[in-house]
Image (cartoon, rainbow over all chains, first blue to last red):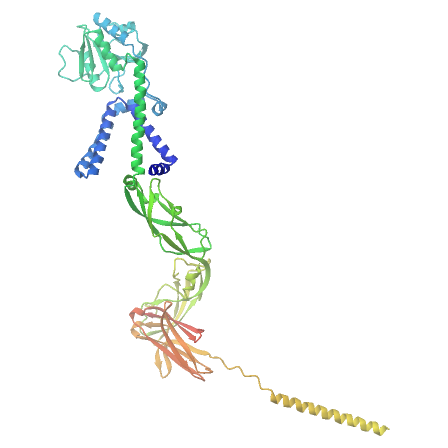
Length: 476
Length: 149
């Protein structure tokens, strides 16, 4: 119990927001894609992922690789194959509906009126083609017809397909309680197994059903029969009851609507709970699963140094951190996300010792520090000072043997350097860059660059970094 | 009465002369008794210092500041005058500020010349200096030279 309470106390408000946000995103995806084929395939992919992780944990190398490959390919296939379905999910709704709104049932399609109209047309041997779209978008498949937007009545449906009506050819598309489009051209099926009595109207109905999840009603002009195509199925309708049943099933209309809505609500709450559960498990396994330790070598940042003091030396320029956390989180961490900063505002001239503590560290949430090496860092600071040094020419090479190098005079004889006092005190002479003797044949003059012996030192502002060297040689 | 006054005056005069002479003689006696202030001894003075290739009859030969490593040696010659008393001086040899050798040399009055010598090899190439100091570390002079190819 104590352990549980300790664990709960480590949860931050950011963690709660993190879990809540991701749970909501998962729930929204469920709400938007529920009932689509893409959703079913995604569930399959999720199942494959669980299998893959199981295979990894069991050490089944080949199986885990194969699963990983299948998941990658499957994810790609889902996007390609179900692009229309995915697009229709997002296109059919505005941003608010995607982020917040629950899937609303559109206006109830009047199944009775459609059934009555279809049977009326069949009795009168008037050919008809009526499309009832499912969830998928038909735009890419159906050649656009004439916009209609009329509320469904038996008379209107009959009049649309009346032989003398200019728009009687083609299909009428019904959404909700309205005929939205007439005279639409549907793709023809290429199937060979369709009965020979089926004409173009039937082939068009079968073609659209094969390519989408729409249901299409066909009334034969020659035989007065009613046929329904859905998916790859072709049903001949023999009674009004059968037709109504198929239409209701396709349109998701239940007799007991209250019960249905209650069931939907329960389903949504269950989905919300499952989303929360899944995200919580994933979150805790990523951020709280103390199953790995990883080392990081992180350079130390020294900040807020007194400008009068020079950072002369440190016992360590980087420290090794042993961080503990879940394997997934540790593998995603980059060294740049970790910082070690030592505040030198209170440091004084000389050696300052700092023990590396949590205050100096900045590590991503979800990780804990197990160990740090070295635990202590010595930082040596020194006051800046100025000092003059004699300059000595550094002769190099080989003087012609017949000559003796009598003397040389360097001008200026001294240079002033600025830097840490300790370093200045350790130097007694500043040398020039090597000056070659090989070409010297007589007394002369040359220039030479002054070599600053430490990166901590600089020349006094305004000083030249070159000196003039006069030299005298004579014959032996 | 007049004669008595004249005798008194002469007596004063004689007495005054005798007093002056007496004081003068006393003063001379004091001067002779007081010792003269000690004459400040001449300090140890470096009159000549140079680097040379060798010594020839107690004289430096071929003064130079560039020594070829093939020469094999470098000599630091110093001459002091006066040398008030027997004392010691040092020749401290440095290569790029790193001490390489120290020679303790004894000087004897009234004047003295001495030298120190090191062997030089290929590995000794670079700038050198010799600090000439007394026993307390006071630097008389610094000689700078280079060892080259």
